[in-house]
Length: 206
Ligand code: GTP
Ligand code: MG
Image 1 (cartoon, rainbow, N blue to C red):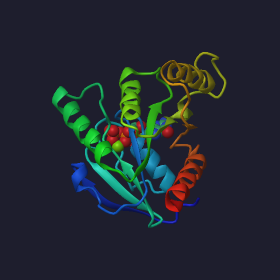
Image 2: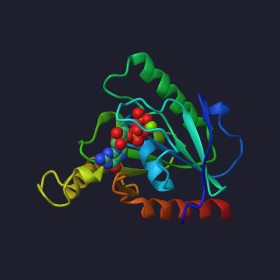
Image 3: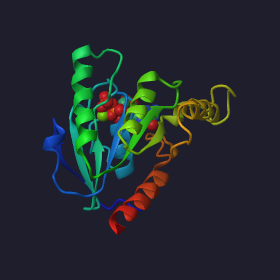
């Protein structure tokens, strides 16, 4: 699938304010600074579409972007970062959970994970929460440009992904779909767009 048009529609501070049309929707979620907004820009070939920052906590609202006039990409606030206050984290988590409860048109959540880090409790718990609430998710590893392809056998891309898969399989019977990306180097976008296209076709055939 090619993205022919990508347009910002609105920012909402609550799921109830999100666009009301019932078209397929895909959300990007993960810890702050993991690269959610950057990946949306990379997929859409537009560096200015979603706001990005090297400082965590940039995206604070639910942002809807309409793609090819037919489906939404949604940029969500991060669900926590080192310097966030407890009140801030609670507020973001409230917005995020309401979003996932209310958006029945959501086809899939893409959970973004920074490939450099080992599995973090907050991500695994969020995946468990999605599973409990019957919300489908895939994993996208971000920033793969920061690790070597082979390099250190314990620290290269393959090793990191392998370790993460082990953690997943300790908690789930099956692995979700997994993608490897770098927004700065434009790696991995075709696979994600192909997957979205496949899921959207299924949804529209129903
Ligand atoms: P919040 O909105 O704060 O939750 O963050 P976010 O997840 O939207 O992250 P954002 O896209 O703003 O990116 C955070 C930082 O990571 C920015 O400095 C980006 O330039 C950088 N970044 C994002 N993706 C990549 C990547 O693939 N490779 C590298 N090297 N840096 C990246
Ligand atoms: Mg962001």
